[in-house]
Amino acid sequence: MAKNPSNGIESVSRRTVLAAGGTALGITLAGCMSDENPNQGSGGGGNGSGGGSSGDIVITGSSTVYPVTVAMAEEYQKENPDVNISVDSTGTGGGFENHFIPGNSDINGASRPISEEEQQAAEENGVNPIEFQVASDALTFAVNNEADWIDCLTFDEIAQIWGPNGAQTWSDVNSEWPDEPFELYGPASTSGTFDWVTENVIGERGSHRSDYEGTEDDNIIIQGIEGSQYAMGYFGYSYYLENEDAIKALAIEENEGDGCTEPSLENASDGSYPLARPLLVYAAEESLQNPAVADFMRYYIENSSSDLVSQIGYVPANEELVEENLTKLEEATEGGSSGGNASEGNDTSGGY
Image (tube, rainbow, N blue to C red; front, side, top):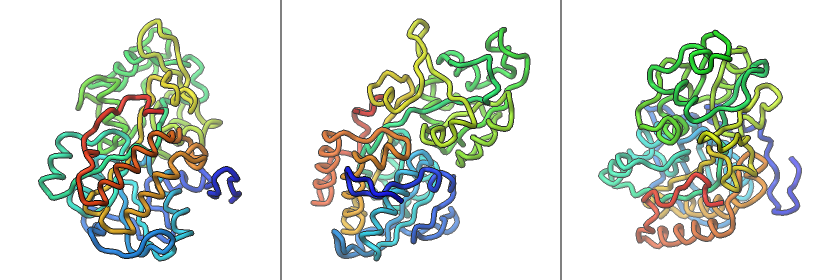
């Protein structure tokens, strides 16, 4: 891998990371977790910090955030070979419910803010989630390359297609579209991307249709779209960027007359893309008392503004956000609540 001269971090191939899909990628990492036999979070154990850390770190959560976390873990372990980091793509909600809230993971990636119910359940279980925004995403809807009848989707059309009792054929939405049934591929209901689209586009929590191919492996969504002229799906922009020759991304129009805006890092960064959203990681305050977890989290935050993030396909954090995150981390590792457990200020532009 080539050195990035601007930050000293070796670039990580998106193809290497994304090809792993929903499975845990071995980087000297622990094996893939299961609900029946999850790895235990590190809690307050471990020893050492900064270039000499040792111990175990368990990370679960969003498949969207997963490529960034894997890349950060891989780079960190080059400097800290005695730290064993397990990264598993479980979906945002699946990670919270099955691993992070029970105390079996130290960090959970999230493509939407933690819910009030999840926050309450964590606190009742003695887990205090600390929120760090680490990147921004241009959530992407895509179709087959042969779908020459469509280049842009409105929020209303998305709701007609993906809402409960959704349209069955393309012509149900637009009479100029083919009278052919949809083949729909998307994230599973445990996914933060599923939740984000449901709440922010369709308009009501729990109002997403269920008769589609749901999966936590974004590569399966890509393959489904590529395999049928009448297919559609959605996922994080990074997965589109790796497959941009194989499928077609759709521009998005939020309100009639706004005009269609294509998904891109630039449009996500300036907030002009309607489906721009923040990408988050939550660390358990209790786990941050482990110097290895705290040191890795500090490394993650400091490098969230680097080219490593944009190489994967997301918008890096700006320096103001990095400093805000470092302040949260410092307060949490000093043993006091940082106040970062509430979902504050997560607008769709992601603060970039």
